[in-house]
Length: 402
Image (cartoon, rainbow, N blue to C red; front, side):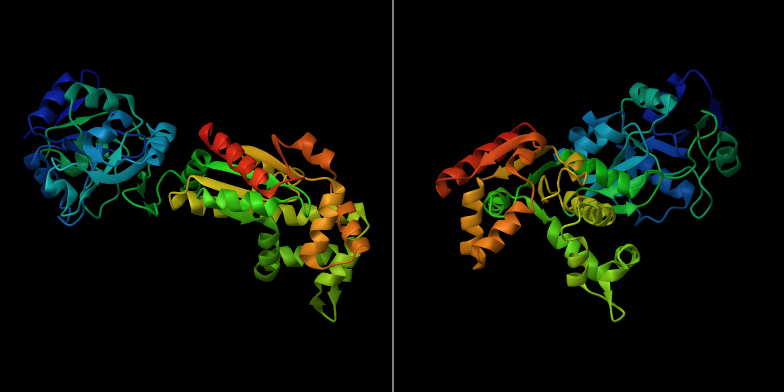
């Protein structure tokens, strides 16, 4: 068999694929060995030519995200969002296959990977052929993936019908593979697209609501409403205390900046509190350290929630605005109550004296700070049922508008 090389006109290559022949095609990552993904005979030839184990399934190349519903069932909105963000590009998304996909493609499973290559010649070939391509990398199993047509010919000259010569592949690494057939979503193969970038894109599809306000304002009630709506609630104060126990790097940085927080050779939280209490400059110095670490942990928690299929999260932080965490939120909500109401609440809640309650309230930001800095304000000075109703009404409105 003579292996043809196509550089311009792709109509004959499209006819070859429709007829069941194998054609190597360029992508932005590596060359693929393409055959009609709906033709069992063509798929069998791919396995044979590559020497690929039959237990390894194949992915399908498609021309765009509209193909998801053509070849897959139960496609989650998050998968379509990733396709909209990264296709054409080096991301393969594994989904539930429709029943007409040949079982040989699925290798005995019920899922199939879809990939839209970022190469104009292969996208045009997909359009001309009108069928999805089963297209693993165009190399014998165990050999390096080819980045140019010459290497493909070295591997398969005389064994396949044609090669589309699209020049050198720009990336040279295979696509990243993510399974979204069920939750949690899983990165099956780290490729050209970093896993963190994929997770961050999923986070961007979530609704993240920032909640802030002083002690006694009613944040806890607001957060319970969000939990009831299915939100992951991230308490940044809890995150900070967890980091003090877990993150030696943050603790070392704090102790280096505040040596007075080290008592008898060990970190002492009360000593740290004494070092920053009443000193705006010292508190600002501490926050510059802790906000960085807390923000990174919050980012990691949001990624994890997104990979679990989460669509709603709440970030609870009294310093939501100054810490920069507000930038991670789709909307920020300040929960406010007048000074006297807050003092009364924390006296009853914590069993503390009025002077101590006053000192705690007065040490925090005033109501105007939250009114200036937040997108929305929830006032909590009167009836608890009315406040709960207002919370649910506002949160549902934010979720509705994304």
